[in-house]
Image (cartoon, rainbow, N blue to C red):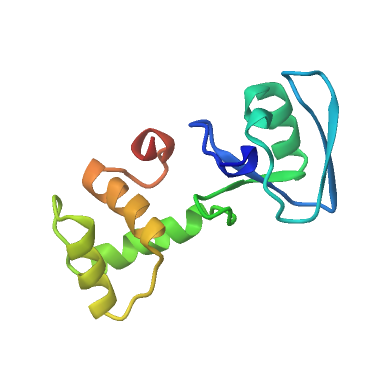
Length: 134
């Protein structure tokens, strides 16, 4: 498995610009990452100050397990679909997915899984989603 394809438990990031120059905290060397949407190596997340700086300046964004931009709004939209479809707390993801899709909503399995964690965890709008999705 390549360094760019592993999850590290600290999140995945992708480039939002043509060139991202990041410092590898392990070696101290600058590394150029080319291309919008390119996966950022796992060592990037080891330097929290660098991550914060790059996120604040829009150089990188958080990615999902498929290296696609993670959209919290899509998770909230999926949560609304779960509620609208009449799901009950404690239902498993396969049953909820069937219920939601039979009601005419279309969401990825990842969005369904995250929204279901919020639904079953008692998440309230305005709270951070991080503790529920960890």
